[in-house]
Length: 274
Image (cartoon, rainbow, N blue to C red):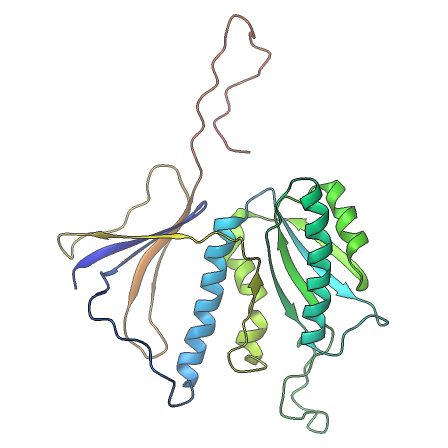
């Protein structure tokens, strides 16, 4: 396989990884699993889960979107995660219908948590499975204004509070890790259970392979790169080094021009994005 730079574009987020071009010829259909997934592979799958979430968040959500927490009071607290997911999906249907009337499209990503208070020392209360303690939802919604927040709270029928804060584009990775922390700490409650879910209209990030002539190529930040960070990692098996870099790249704005009709009332030139 030829050497290449794997370039991933996910909205403002860009990743460049030095590696090899995958060979797509002679691919075989994946067979049926014969043995359980090893602990090392399970750890690596969970690690890739937050990375996939990071790229999906960066592709679909920006500084005008919101991060919310939906909670339940004692009277409406579901018995398990399945019931909690059903309750949240009922909210999604109501909120999507309200936004559709205004001609707006709804995009969201959410996960359900409830294992924060699991006790390892109490053997009498453990039945060998993860137990739900205080269920709640972490949610990312697109373009929620201050007026829309009141609508969101009115449509939520869980009885608890709805906390909201603007999404910070400089912390996509931290948000992705936070939303998938329970799976890494406690494991999945059931084999194959997803750590997060999203609406069907989410966009996919772009992946491009750029072949390079030799192994002496090094990565450098492009003009205008923000939060540039290089990394080098190994998988749980101790091999397959991953060398790359991640950064944010904001789109350039055309400089404002003064005209004889408008004059200087526009204020100073501003090349920074909103």
